[in-house]
Amino acid sequence: MTKTMSVQVKKCPLRNQPSFLGKVVSTLAYGDQVSVREERASWLHVATGKGEGWTHSSALTPKKIILNPDSREVRASTSSEEIALAGKGFNKQVEQEYRRQNRNVDFTWVDKMEQIVISQTEIGSFLREGGLTAEGGKS
Image 1 (spheres, rainbow, N blue to C red):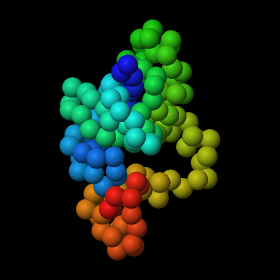
Image 2 (tube, one colour):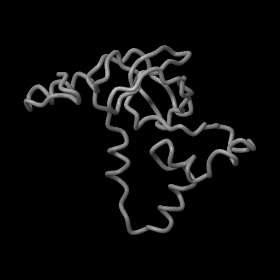
Image 3 (tube, helix red, strand yellow):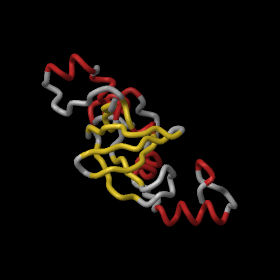
Image 4 (cartoon, rainbow, N blue to C red):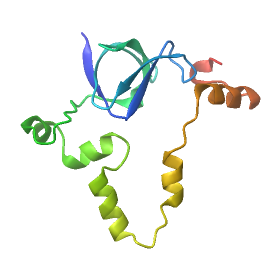
């Protein structure tokens, strides 16, 4: 039996092997639906209209994510708080309210960290130079 899940992060890379160092073969977006074909530890082999590959289970949720906030289906499947947090970040309204309630907090470094992108090459170099192995023992 195939299980359907939804992507709960902004960008979800599909990899050619169950490892963070696997080559990215496709990238899914928040709310995309996938069919789970196989489970291996905390990795899932999934299929979608954008291709198939491996992704970490933390990027998926069994809940159906509907991106139209006026839809009745949204109210039935998730709360507005869950929708805001499902993408692993604040929506604009939540962020504005948090900033209003915490005027003494400097968000400069948080804003800068959100802009950092680390490439697969950099991750691989870091692991090799540190003598580390990727999850599952693959290097």
